[in-house]
Image 1: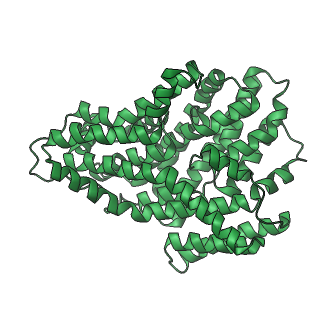
Image 2: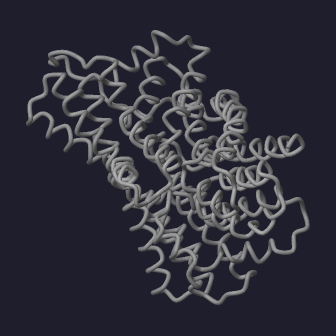
Image 3: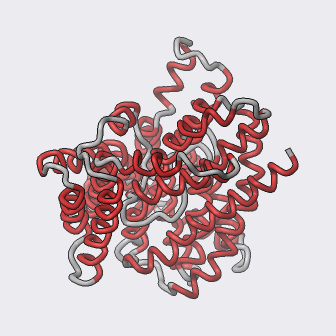
Length: 465
């Protein structure tokens, strides 16, 4: 699910590092994934090592030079950690501030007091959808996870009953709703109207997130009945606190990066002039790194100082927040390395070559191409960009509504069945304390439901428009 920079996208479009045929590439992809799954499940190898070995095996099976495979893996790992690592670190600091100051307790106690047991999954999907509207998926995860885990623990809920609705809200926003990078690139590629796409995206998103979130979570909780992992649950604050931060101040701190990113998105839409002074300012303060950094700095006052923390206590909180995420960063980074290796050996081009002769309706074709590239590369953004580029000629002669539906079909396809080549898969697995099989039964199935339900509603809307 990792969002990509312009430089990364340019690198993705480079010449493949191997001249292997499509049949060999297909076998190499299956073999590489099989190696990773086997090492983790059978030999109980750490996921970071398994992903590293699997990437090397993938390159070898595809006939790529070892030096090029190592470069691809290292580049992917570096880009992923550069793009996601700092956000995870800042999110961990904010989460620790929330936990140690008692702010997270304040939020959780309020949610539990105001929301009935039956309504809790619906409350979580609503909160996640609102927070996820302007946020990158990874930012939403690190902001929401502490609250999700604490609600599940304190309310004695199955983790899946609370976690799946929150993940569904974030994922649907990421794949279908601009201003997320994938939908924005697709809108530009096919010449869609942003406002119409946003409106139709919300029409598709609402029923999709309900089915994949609160409804599916009932079944996910039966298939994988686990409690929130103790190692990831923020501990209750010590009793020596002078006081707890207020509910309003705590919520405002959490929503600060959401508001900053939303302002940036709105200015980008309304002004749409990179040389405009206002847009230049909002582009800076609305970037994920600056928005989260601002929330951390503000949180030191609204959370830490409000709870009576000294400067030494604040420094200790920041230091303690970083150690537990080292393993997560390495695993997520290695997932990005495996994804980049897949892209660099030419898997995306292989899928495009296969799809050129498919004779099916444009909306379904766009969805299927995005699905195939998503399965092969693990990147929703790469799937969106590749599919949009291929089907762009089909948008000529379409009405404004149909072109927007083409964008949504691509977005829905880009979310299909996240598995071991997706950094988001490992992020969810580690935060929720699941094994690979449990993550596939819950997270991967949820992503597939979003994708399938999304294209169904897109096709239904096409009958009307």
